Image 1 (tube, rainbow over the protein chains, first blue to last red):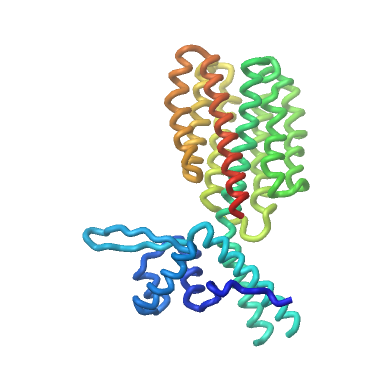
Image 2: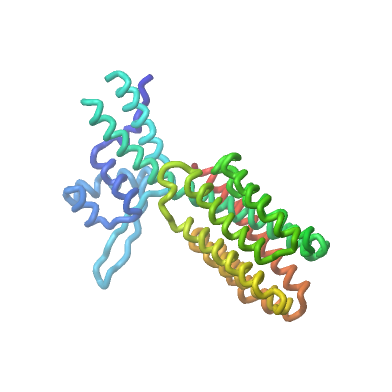
Length: 99
Length: 236
């Protein structure tokens, strides 16, 4: 039986964002942009989608006079990402049997 | 796509799932642990207040006999009954020296036994990745070392120790343990401060006041643990 993969998460850039946030816990906008090799606009668009869905949350702060925005996964986001990964794993396991 | 490539991707996914679930699982283990040990302390402290003979006297001492049941129940939901039953091996081994009223030997057996079984239950019982030391494990180990060292000191010097000093000292160790647990669940930090600074004031009015304060703190420890455990349950 074919499992449904969360369409919102099933996107190369968003998966990259979620994986980095999962591994690092918390990351600022610039580090995320550099790690993923994206433009500011592109990253901001994807982050907004994830924010609107309650998957990531942000916190704005200052280092000296410089504003900095940190992103992290919400509990709901983490749970949704785990579900996505489990479905993907099951899907790939079914594929492995067919190979 | 080749089978090897697919296996590699599956391994990556497994690692990510493990990373994502690890923190939550550990918090849950810790919450349950705090609940069980809170109940153990509340029960025995109540006995100290109402039936001191059962709580303190050798060979009846409820602190000793319920200790291994607390260990058993604290690991049961995560390590399974087979691994958790190992606690009773230490119980049986320490029973002999306990009945011969040899406190030093009993404490030595308990410390070595508990360290050994902890490795099997918490180190190996949970399967992959559990051997990696995390913050939660560190706090658990520090709790164990503090109480182990406390009892070792008592076993060596109990004949010369003043009763009130003993009571205040164990309160101090308990308070530090609770304070440390505040790293995982912030509310324990407040409870730790209460134990460390308010209970010595209660002790000024007499031993019974200290015991009541200790008993209430242990009950709060258990209730907070249960609350955190249930809360985690909803999340996962």
